[in-house]
Amino acid sequence: MAGGLTVRAKCVLAAGVTAFLCGLALQEPGLTRGGLLAAALPLAALAFVHRARLQVGSRRSVTPDRVNAGESVLVQLTLRNASRLPTGTLMLDDQLPQQLTGQARFALDGLAGREERTVSYRVPALPRGRYRSGPLRARLTDPFHFVDVMRSYTATADFLVGPVVERLPGSDPLRSHDVGDNAGSHSIGAHGADDASTREYRVGDDLRKIHWRSTARTGALMVRQEERPWQGRGAVLLDVRTGAHTRHHTPAVDPRASDSLEWAVSAAASVAAHLLVHHQDVELIFDPTAPAALPIPEPSVLRDTLAVITSMAEPDLSGLARQLAHAAREGTLFAVLGTPDPASLHALLHAHERRADGAGSGLALVLDTPTWRGQAPEAGTGPAHDAARRLRGAGWRAAVVVQGQDVAGAWTGVIHGLTDRSVAQAAVRR
Image (cartoon, rainbow, N blue to C red; front, side, top):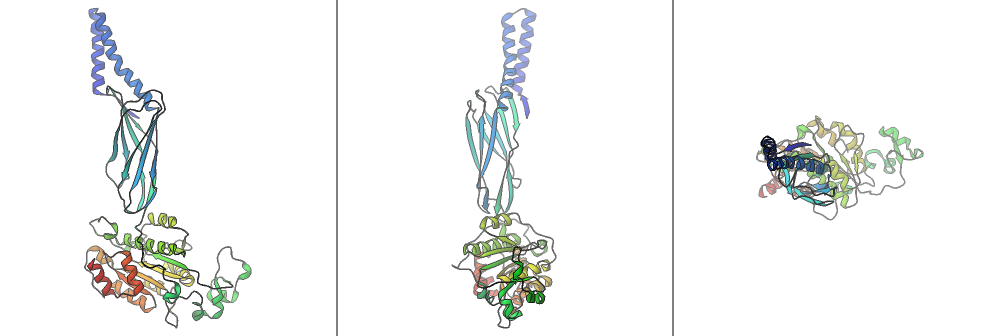
């Protein structure tokens, strides 16, 4: 709390004191009383406003507190005068998120006794991240503008902005057998018939169901399962390595147009949301320090996780090899990759060996990151195209993505097996 008498109040106070002293010296009772009254007015206003500032409470809310990038939120501020006496005019300054300049300012007429009033403002669309609005500062004054007192409140409100989620075409997502990963028998060609009815041990499984022969053969604890139907399980690999992405020095309205990492996060969110809509079990793979992939039971968990995800200083994806192998063995693997490197490709190619029948393990979107720096796409050449060809040779469906292409278009390209040239031409036409 800060502030006090204004210049006007100080002048009136000085004039009142002078008139009071002159009245005493000249023995003029009228001048003395007038000076005393003039001097008392600013002091009375000061006492009134200081009392009022202690009686004005504030609370806030943000609606909604979770949005997707490109959407705005509404901040509501409610002020209540707990006293029976009215307040003077209030000037409100609310702190905007740090990524925005300036403050939200309001002029509020005085509150009557016990009155409650709400003001609101809309925060413009923000890129992906966690944000905070507040705290509020209120400046109180009296009707004569003798006193200017500032009060700072401590309440703040946080909200999350998740990535852009595009609706992907197709009534059903690709199933594992659509890309050669038949969940009913995909282990037979690699390890034998016994493995068709086994899976890797999970916490809580009955220890009596451990299949020791498969455990000895694979090196991982395996358990028996009576049936092996297709379970609709998908894992989304999001490449968040710092060195795998690039951004343009000029920010764009849509951050995905200037930052390849933002495009990758949006693509991973869109694919995972598509799987969830069609009632598939979804896992997110991105953190090599995690013991296992992150389960995504519902869209809110997906949005909250991807809202705050940042790049990691990992040299390659080899730290995710175990998570990738487990995901490929249990279902379909969807990968969104930045600039590829040999070690990362090795981890992907060996996550699920191509079988004798030619089946593969998943789908991959490989970002041609130089195009995010303004370089023109060169169809068929470059590290991204070489990586896509190697993945396709191992049975994956892989497509190269260039800057300016939307997620839905890239998804269509990888589903229908468009060539690199046709994908690039489609992006240029947009």
